[in-house]
Amino acid sequence: MKTRVIHWFKFASPQNFYGLAGKLWPWFAALATVLTLVGLWISFFVAPIDAQQGQGYRIIFVHVPASQMSMFIYLVMAAWAGFGLAFNTRLSGMMASALAPTGALFAFLSLVTGALWGKPMWGAWWVWDARLTSELILLFLYLGFLALQASIDDPRRADKACAILALVGAVNVPIIYFSVKWWNTLHQGASVSMKGASMATPMLMGMLIMVLAFWMYTIAIALVRVRTIILDRERHTDWVKHAVA
Image 1 (tube, rainbow, N blue to C red):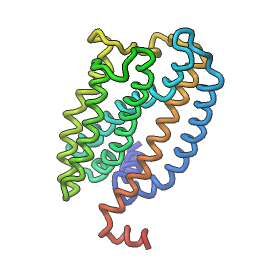
Image 2: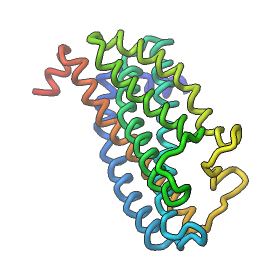
Image 3: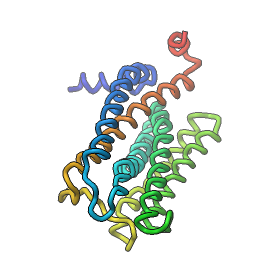
Image 4: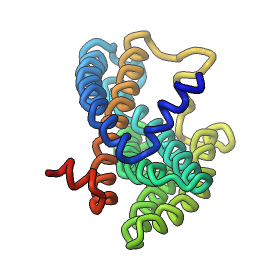
């Protein structure tokens, strides 16, 4: 067991992780592609029409996975940032930086698809609902993280400043999740929970496959992006010069 721990710990080195990420990302990208195609096919051609919302409900197959990933990525980003603060590991800050753009993308996608869904359901593109407002704040936190990262020239100082922002902002994630329970909101509650699902099986299967596809995409793109960050930050080292050559 100790030998295995030591074996995996070596990947805390940016040089070793660079090689591992290069081997893994194509597999996750392939899985993301296949799962997305299967998920979209089920979502648009297999899942039945909703009795109340008609065809318009199908936007949930993008909206729900995007919303879930926007929250989960922020927690993972904050965890990497906190780990970097606690143990002063270089890779932690790089991973947090690699995840932030994808999290911002999903937060934006969540808001856009939510507006497209909300217009026919609520009669308005936007309302200052608790969940919508807290999701908007999440997007601003992502953008703030990216802006702060870009404004500080020293990457190590930037990682520490961004880590504090990420950890403080993490308190917003449970607010998003529990907002429909804590306040009287227009946004509906979760269709899937530990108690079961309030939707037809094909609908559930389509949504779960899309969630998994978004997971695979997130991992793949984060691994690709962290490889770029590693090359940029380690560009003065001999191993990077050798790898580029």
